[in-house]
Length: 133
Length: 109
Image 1 (cartoon, each protein chain N blue to C red):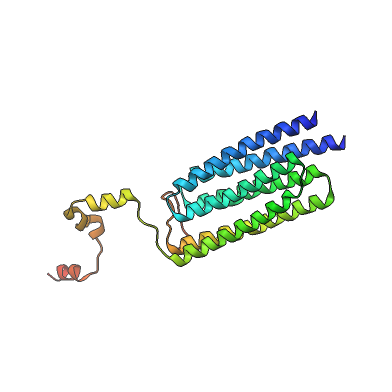
Image 2 (image 1 turned 180 degrees about the vertical axis):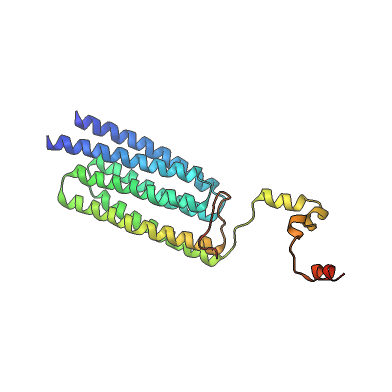
């Protein structure tokens, strides 16, 4: 009876982990920046460790625990290396395409002219000249 | 009796671990920002894989296997915050911005 419960719960956990795996793969494919993809890959390693643990329960080979631990070590080192790579690449995040298109498509007059609220309270040479007159 | 109890405990650990992994994946997809995604993946994801490893140790009912599973859990709990903080620090230093809903950025002074 309890063996049946365990078998069914392992199957359910396999299905749930497969859904989590697919969601994470979607983030890896879609992820707008490199760092998003690195985070998703780190998460993918954790999910694969969960898969390995479930296979260990189903088959009874406890040697799979060592494989899971070594996979966790490799995933940790890969994330650290990717973090160093992001740091050394040093490219700032690009503006979103929508903002960029808005800035480029705006007419030159509205781009250059400041609004009145921004104009107030300046201490530059133009304001000083106006005050002198 | 004991074996049945261990089976039930293993089933509970397996289901909760898989649920944690699913919650982490949903957070990874739905949260708006690199840093919030990192918060979902590094906490819930670590607990999910750790609980599944613990389930293997409980299911085997042997002390060495349980000790190895606990060592793996401890190792994951130790390394996940290190990698997450390193990645967040690198991304913030390079200039990945926070999402629009963020209220304040303590590292930006």
